Length: 93
Image 1 (cartoon, rainbow, N blue to C red):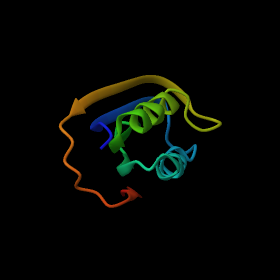
Image 2: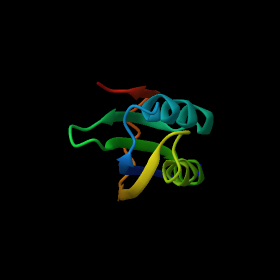
Image 3: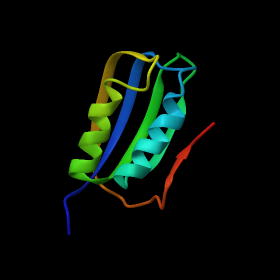
Image 4: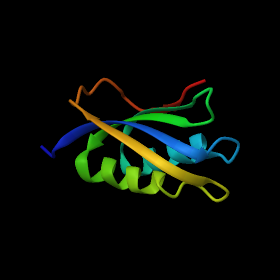
């Protein structure tokens, strides 16, 4: 079995109103990563990714760029123990 990981990620910058959540969901599904993404009241975007280490790391790298129109200033990553609690990837509201 591949090395499975979990990462809590907060993306700061101009990341709301630029389809960041929808594009993150698409990218996560392409990579086979499960979890969720949501906007935070302070204008940042929060996500929880679970999956194979390479896939999660690739998704985190993408978060440093984001979709067209985003201006990412900082990405905070907190690695956690894998739990396998998600069956898919969703946008939370």
